[in-house]
Picture 1 (cartoon, one colour):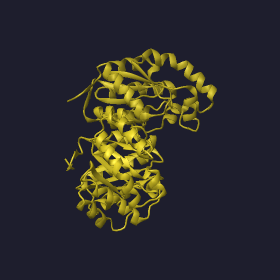
Picture 2 (cartoon, helix red, strand yellow; picture 1 turned 90 degrees about the horizontal axis):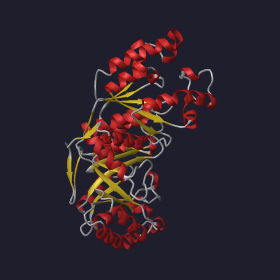
Picture 3 (spheres, one colour; picture 1 turned 30 degrees about the horizontal axis):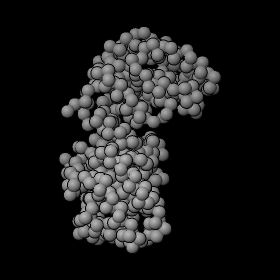
Picture 4 (cartoon, one colour; picture 1 turned 30 degrees about the vertical axis):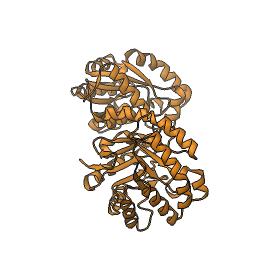
Length: 438
């Protein structure tokens, strides 16, 4: 376990803390945000000083010091027990303004020197971008603050090996925590970030903060067991980066992420395109329960694609294989089972799934489904007619059956997998199927 202690806080990688940003453009906005955030009881707050209008107009240490004292005095009154991260994010790394390197250094060091009077525990330093970051970080340490060495990629996700190397590079600067934020362009980028985080957490001596941004990467903000992150960022009044969920959502999901027990299995059903595989993977990352995709198991066992099985053995032959697969899978408990769209059309399959756990129906409008599947070529029952009217007809035929067999139902029209997972977990908890462990 990695532990780091500031003046006001102890951070460990098995109990992440939640940080909420303050992004006001002036004194009154920052004060109003801080008052609202105080009622949310975050573990930390982050003052994003680059949002200040006057700093944007005049990015200098002088203008900062003129503004900082009254703001920090107000924050100390409103959030007296809340440690503060001071961040001056540059435009080059997703912030509000391009600072000269001299101005950036002077402002960060000036902020560090105020820390003796105010609750600033950490200074965020763009440790990869800044030249001679090692000496810069030493100045901040000498002023009495710890350093989060950060690096942000708002247009892409570097290769997994590249991300590990970035975190290693940050450690060499003398930073106390290494932070990396990346933008995913596809699902594989999110997986790469999580794998890079695990690798770096195993080989670095300092703690990490890592995240994949946007809705696509939002799951990484609540899967800190897998990433090793000691801090996760949640929105209070406004988000400071794409993909930040509200503090209420993050706090709730972290409670499931830390330790929960499942009675039986969770079987996800629904029409094609409702995101059963996506949601099952997200649920697995949050809870640690094993994720199993029935269609993938069939393909692996048969050595054939679903299309080829349909072509060779017909739908009846495929359904027989599907039933046998479910019988084998449900011999175990504690799994999230993603079922094919037609799995519950057969009574025997429903009986197998209900005996082994809880059936969760994911629902969506025909329009949502069509938008998600219209470019797919691996859907046998749509191959001859990829149209909205055909999707509506198929859904009308299956929806009554889905509604009949489901133990609980959740809409996925919002396409927010994090909130979908939270709704599923809360409903399962209400049913007594999931228990939070001490």
